[in-house]
Length: 236
Image 1 (cartoon, rainbow, N blue to C red):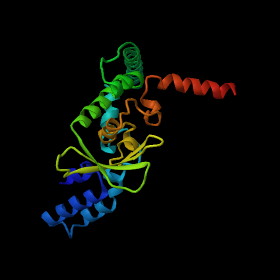
Image 2: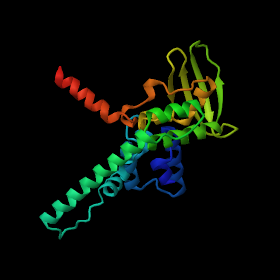
Image 3: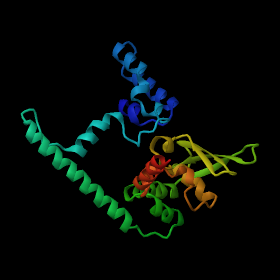
Image 4: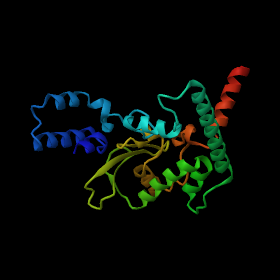
């Protein structure tokens, strides 16, 4: 139940409901440590930080990700000269991996007949394309129903993976400018569209990713764009 409170809730109300059930079930009402932990919930509960871009990495995972990326073979007894050689080898490995990834992105393009996935192969790196494809495939099994509203150009939808809509996400679609908002806040948090929004895009025959939802940092041309922007600023 605590693990669900940590990273398994999508809404603040859901988190509070699970937390209260956990406290009642295990008799934690008078535990000061849990009271302090609840007071710091905005620092560790993912449901309360979805409005902050994190690329989908939890704060508790950052050290693990960094250590895995660096993978230093050094310890407390490593001498300074040895450390320098290890660091040089690590940087060379990084650069070699980056060159290999860049080459694969420019020469390899996944085959697909779906228009929106074709567009994704053109703009995203291979790793991001795989993530987007997973969201797209999940959207194929999702259910969506429109909610009544008096607003002409704004549509409201409930989207769920359950046929009985037991667990729903709310999507708002502004028809005039192709703008979407989802209660899961996946795009704000990770920079990638969620399957809830993709489901509504399918309903309205939107076969390409709107420009506003293509984050530059996830595209094949991210590095070249940075160099171009820096060069233009220098020349100006």
